[in-house]
Length: 116
Length: 111
Image (cartoon, rainbow over all chains, first blue to last red; front, side):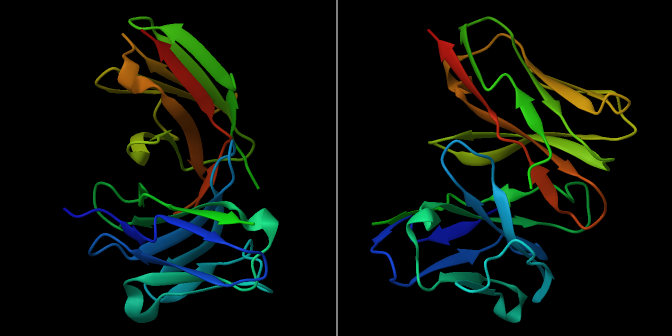
């Protein structure tokens, strides 16, 4: 079974620039999550999708962050414009909604973003 | 917001010893999960314990859950160098599949 794919793995940009991250979840997983993880902290949920609908985006800074999941499969997360405090690892995870392993989250390798 | 608080924040032990880390949380839960994160394999699910369970085992891992105290512990027996990682507890409150994460315990296994 292929895991969660993310790209790019690393990105360095200057503040006020834009950046986009891509995620392809495990096939058949209906739920997709984007997290922000700052060094030394646990993951913080930014947005949760179920199929192509948003379940929770209460912690997404909507003035600069946007996310979409077209056709209920892969997803993109965009930051525009970036700030210094956006430097973090952006993790994508997916989860099945039924079966033995429902509610477990499967993570991609993450994208390490550095904003200069 | 983060619900789980792991204790200790950091732990350093000799290879072969047992490692115990604890997690406390604030609200009622459906289940509690432990994950491991290291630079090589990213964030990986280890074990899930449901609110009606008290103890669960998986290989060298033993997890306990005390819902009256809103706490859980993860025991790793006979530690190995490969167990060096950060360990996170995450709680699921209901069926919306959302997890709330603690800040993690950093475990270092000394050879």
